[in-house]
Image (cartoon, rainbow, N blue to C red):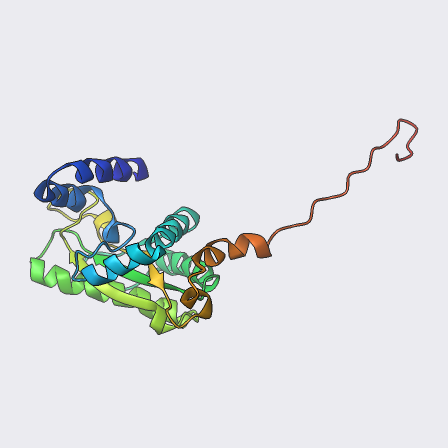
Length: 216
C-alpha cells in the first residue's frame, strides 16, 4: 500500500493541479503525511519550508507510520473505540510521549453510506474520540488536534457500500511545539535523533578464548 502511495505522489507532482487532486483523493492516506496547505494553511506551509522544519516533520511522520499503526477502524455508523482501537492508540500514545516537542493531527474518515454532510460530522466525531483517548493516556490536548474530517471523500476501498477499512482515523505528525527551547533554536535534528542517542548501548568487550579454556 505504501508503495502505491509513493508512486501516486510522483505522478501527481508531474500532472496538472486538477489531476493531482484526483490522485490525492484516491491514492493517498489522510493528511498525506504533512499538511501541504490545502486546508487554508498556506502561510504555515511556507513557513515550514523556509525554516527547514517541514523536512523534519516529514521524517517524523514516516517514522511514526513505520513504527506504530497510525490507523484505527470503526463499526458502521459509530464513533466508539473498540478494544483493538484502544490497544492501537495506547501504542500511539507511548510513541508520542517520546517526543514532547511534537504536535499531532487526527483525520477522520467514513465509508460512502449516508449523506456527505452526515459523514463529515461522523468523521469528526471519530477524530475527536481518538484525541480524547490519547489525552486520557497523558498526552497534552495542546499537542493534539482533530483538525479535519474527510467524510467519505478519501476511501481506501472505492465502494458505495459498507466498508470497515474506510471507516477510520489516521494520526499524523503535524509540526513542533513552538514554546520548546530546542525548537526555538531550530535544532530539529536533535528531536529526531535524541531517542537513538539516549538508547545507545556501549559496545561489548570481546574475549578471545584459547583452546585450553583460558582467555587471551
